[in-house]
Figure: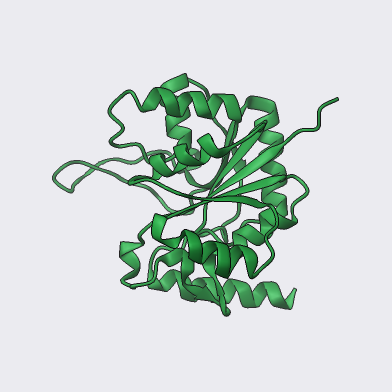
Length: 235
């Protein structure tokens, strides 16, 4: 029986303009290690993951190989490749680099606090449906605004989730969805679940992530991340 092969595509090509820093957010440090280190460490240690493909900016490839992959001995990182102009371009380049892959975990390198438990829930979800997204029920009441900035509607909070990564798919499904998308207008596409929903009509299973699985986007997020890390160290 063929052993299942799972690949993690870790996206580290974002510019991080909201961080107001010359250093891209995924390379800023939490407790003396780059944000990107923490998610790579989780995938490196996970028995569920056989290969990691790191997607970054063309100008950061050498740095990532030397200062992250080699320095921290991330042996599962088989390729460090250049991404594209938009997120979906970077994902597509990662998908093209996959070899002999059953399932693919697509993850934002700016989310440092994924855990093995999240990966386990994700693999169970994708094995069941072929497509799943990690997320958490929204703690806040959400308002839909109209174009003039007034409240248009209020969705039922019990049905509202904040979506995180990784998002996990059967490889043929996500590869085919992205190839279909590239023949069309790609504006407005914000995540891979949307690509699969839109292009393949596939229903996406939601699986629980963690309220600590935050994305480092603003300077305040770094302060929160430091607090989380101190908590983990005490456990």
